[in-house]
Image 1 (spheres, rainbow, N blue to C red):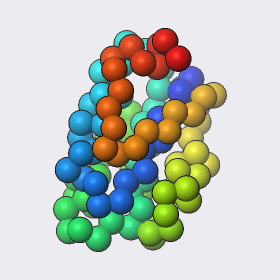
Image 2 (image 1 turned 30 degrees about the vertical axis):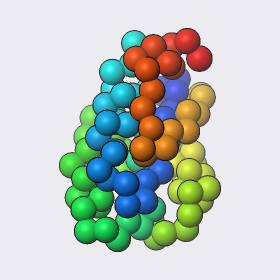
Image 3 (image 1 turned 90 degrees about the vertical axis):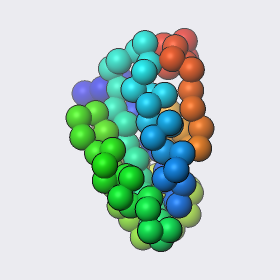
Image 4 (image 1 turned 180 degrees about the vertical axis):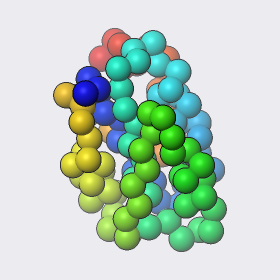
Length: 101
């Protein structure tokens, strides 16, 4: 069970998603999971970007568009971590952010 679950809701922001996920992958604290929730993106590219990110350490959940809060709550419901870090798809965190938090 990971200590920290990073929840990244995403709606039509696939162009930023790689940077957000990479900022989490580059953390000095490594006992974490990343959950991306594609909240019904319909821009033609975000669903493919999300699918390409799925793999070891990154889980992608696809939902119908229900809004940011519902997408975040979906990710939290699927998380296994003791702590939750919500992160927007167009944000990045510094490499020691989780360790210091």
